[in-house]
Image 1 (cartoon, rainbow, N blue to C red):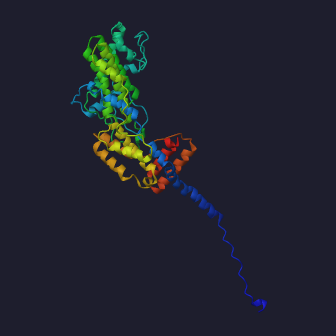
Image 2 (image 1 turned 120 degrees about the vertical axis):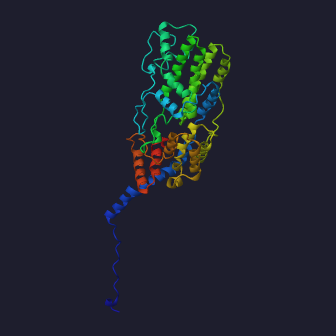
Image 3 (image 1 turned 90 degrees about the horizontal axis):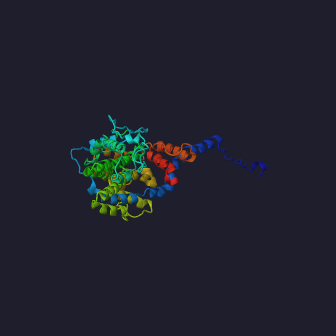
Length: 431
């Protein structure tokens, strides 16, 4: 065999060199498409359990105050069945100062609002030197004013007390406190709620303005007592208790419930002072009630929760409980709408049957008016609606997470991705 007969070996094949442009494009696609897709799932995967545990009901202190308030129901004023719920709701709205805050919600336009002159005026320096203003700048100290009745008032002080006692606002308040039921939402907001509205930005009642009515009522009662009109003075103080129960029984938020309990407490203390001053034996019972510290925990809340599963079960139990307080049930409905943020399965496919069944049951049991039906629709869709601005716009990492989740949410047509990322990027779990 000659050298020419030896078969030539083919040259070794060179490995194909990847096109740098294709490699860059693949990397770019990973960064631009795949990573944003992973962001919301990664957030829920890492923080879902923590977020779920954070959702546990926390209102034991409020419930204790509400339990104490219930003992005052016999001091509430009699109801007038001729007052319709919407009429009372409009009256409650008229008791509030005009709301100038920007909001997506459309407010009911009232022809006029009840005048409370003490909100805008300073109490003259020479009036009530032993009861100068504390809670409200235009009113004498409500905690001291009844005690000054036996010593008497000056002519100018009597004129001031009469001005408070005869203010037109009290006719409006009577329409609220004597109503068997109050449509608080229907009296304040126009239906339907706009698509741009989110339950997180729903304007709340003016906390301070409502408490001012309780303080002014004590001043009003001092006027009647100084004129020996004891029945009128007592009914004025009982109206504070009645106003508290309006919020407790008709409110749709935990804040409504809490403010109601505070108002009942103000009325309880004022009635205690009044009964002691007039030698009424009710003073002893009310004094004991004022000094009692309730050790009861919230019946609906149950034991302290330790996990997302326990928090979930507690919320479902509250929503399903027809005897639980209305404001708390409304609050828990909103919280239940966020359960897809606690696990990957519900993030991808929506809430499981235990949540949807509880919500459907509440839809049948809880709302009394179209305004409350609309609130339930708003609350149960809170996760999938556009959230109001949250957090600082210059917070780089949260804004990046939200941007990535928004992209993924649009591509996959799953608004839960953006909603959960918003809560976790700007909410307590990352705090």
